[in-house]
Length: 49
Image 1: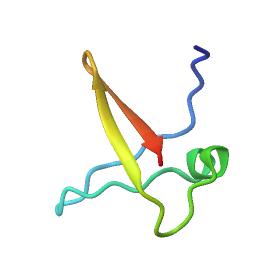
Image 2: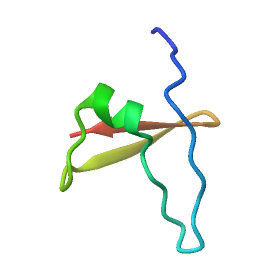
Image 3: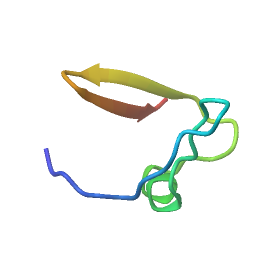
Image 4: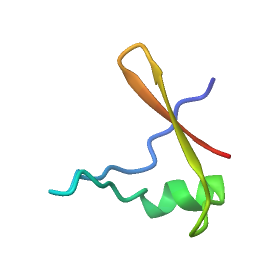
């Protein structure tokens, strides 16, 4: 699997994150889309449903 850096973000005081623009564009994420979070060892993987 190819690994490519697409941005970073911070966790807000409400424990929310913003998906970086380049990643949203790459995955085609739009408002209202459902996102799954998976753990792979010590990594978090995000998947658009």
